[in-house]
Structures are given as C-alpha cells and as structure tokens.
Image 1: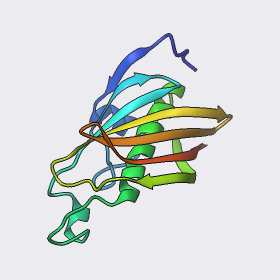
Image 2: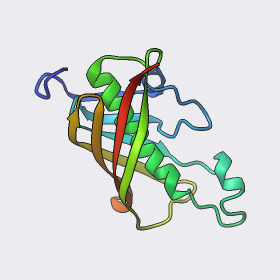
Image 3: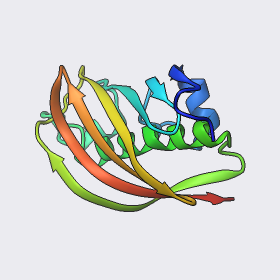
Image 4: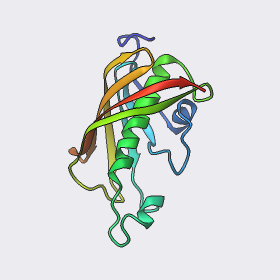
Length: 154
C-alpha cells in the first residue's frame, strides 16, 4: 500500500473512476474525485442535473435526489480510493457494502446542485474498510453516514 505521505493531492477524472469501479450510467454517481490522499481520504464531486433518471419519479414536479443515492455516491468515492490505494482494478475485484450506520439526511438535494462527497477512512482490517462520509452542497451538510465495505476478487 502506498504511504499517505507518498501521494497527496491526487485527483481522478471519470475515466479513472470507471477503471477502478464497475459502475456505469445510470448508477455511476460521481463525476470526479479531488483532494485524494491514498489510503486516507478523498473528495468526490457529483453534479446533479435535471435529466437524472431518478427525478422522473422522485418526485414529479418537486425533484429531490434520493438520500440513499447520496450515500451510494459517498461509497463510490470511497471504493475508488480503496481500489487506487491498493493498485487494483474493477476487472479483478469488486467492493461490496457490508453495513451503513449513523445515516443522517439534513437537507434536500435538487437539480443544479453540486455535491462534494468527503470520505475518510476510519480503519481497515484485511479486505474490510470502514469510512465516514459527509455530503455538502454550498458548504452545508446535506447527508452523512458511516459505512463498511469489503473488497472481493471476482
């Protein structure tokens, strides 16, 4: 694993993200990742647009991004961080949710918002990684959660 002091301030574009995790539209929920400290933390960015598939039914005439998808975006940010930290790709490995706790939804997210998804490793043991995540729009917390995931070979 790369030491935290070895690589600071990395960023990943959507092509890099798709090389790390198997998610594709409509389930790829992050557009880029900034402020990467391998093995420790990262900030994902999701530009919420009015043509997102979920807005058709959530809610017609009053579009709000589902909170579970905000947590999924946090998890995808963490998954890319883990895969890039370990130097593995989505072709050989997958990252699976194991648990979600302390989820809180503070404010709704609307079309036109940009979500900054700040994730930090709490600990890892073997193939299991635990993260805390926070989603912010214009500097205000819209959601937060603690979640655990496992890396498995395909």
